[in-house]
Amino acid sequence: MSDSQPQSHEWNEVVEQWNEQFMNALEENMEAQAQFVESWSDAVGEATEENEISDGVEGYARAYETWMNASQQMVERMNDQLEGEDVDVEEFRDIWLNTANEAFKDVMSTTAFARMTGETVGDVLEMQQQAQETSQETLRTLGFATEADVVEIGDRLVELERRQHDVEKKIDRVLEHLEEQ
Image (tube, rainbow, N blue to C red; front, side, top):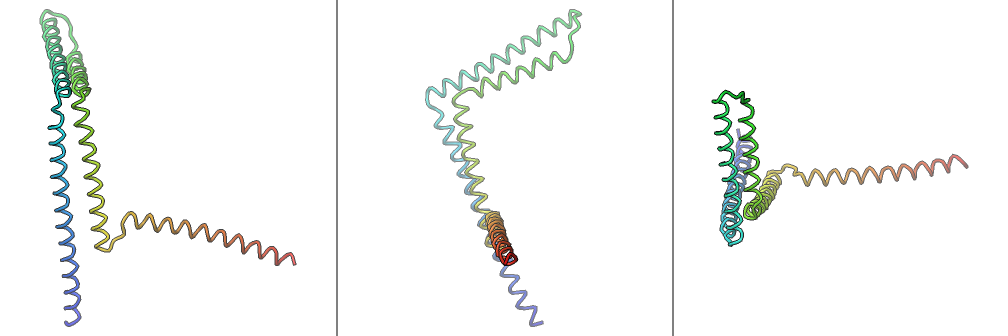
């Protein structure tokens, strides 16, 4: 029974260390998310420059106009159908799909949208980098090999293999030389 007490104590220390690492990782993740939301909010706030606001409003106005034109087309085609014209159901679907594409382009082509998208992508990439670093640190602390460790080992093995081939070539030359004599 005395042997199980030290093992139990060691296990408790390991579990305590895991819990501490998990809480640290969780806290860092929450901080990264808060920074992301804050920077996204700042980006939206910074997009209030007059040119960007004007461009954004114009883009939304174009999208709204596109939807209104689609509604008008739908009414016209419905009237045609009520008057006896054979209107394919797919034509209605196509009107809405094409309109959605056009309206999306109207909004996406604004500088405000481009700026917010660019900043959001940058923030997401930064948050991914922080999460990657946190997970690598957690793995390292828990005694697991990280991706960097595995890559380093692979590089070392390739270098050892190269050196081994060089040594084998030299040994072959020495043996050839000895056989000639």
